[in-house]
Amino acid sequence: MSVKDKIIFSLLAVLIIAGGYFQYMSGEMIKRMDVLNTNDAEHVDVVHNEFREDLRKLNLQFIGRGKHVRKAQQDIIANTNLINATADSLADLISEVQFNLDELDRDVSKRFVDVEMDLSDLEDDFNRNRRKTSQTLSEIQQSITLLQTDMNEVKDKVFEKDKKEKKK
Image (cartoon, rainbow, N blue to C red):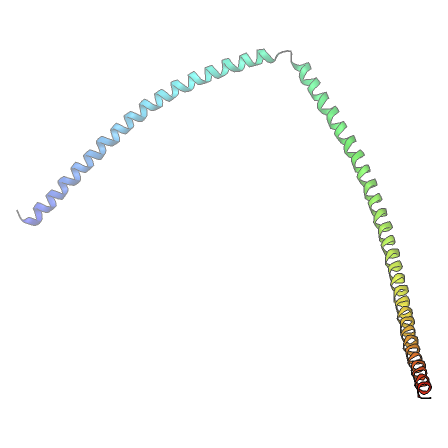
């Protein structure tokens, strides 16, 4: 037997062993799944029975509570109506406040325009008075200068006259 045949037989043996191993594992998994399915079926029956019993108890507790449910429904309807009425009332109040704010805005705007006009008039009056005051001040300064000049002339004449008198 050649080396090539030995390698092929070895590979074949390995494949047969691997196939056997996978077959064994597959069988074990199937057995385990069968056990799990059986346990699951038993557990589902227990849970369904417990659920049915709890549902029966709940139904017994709520028998005769229909009038409480109806009263709660009526309360909800009454609250909804109250909310709607309050919302309408608030909408009216909001509209009224908006109207008042718009009116106030117009009034304030008009007053600001009036104040700006008054301010402009005051500025014009101030400028006119400032020019008049400046002109008057200038005239007073000219008058003072003229008076000083005249006074100096008078002093000079008096001084010359005194000089002439002293010479005599």
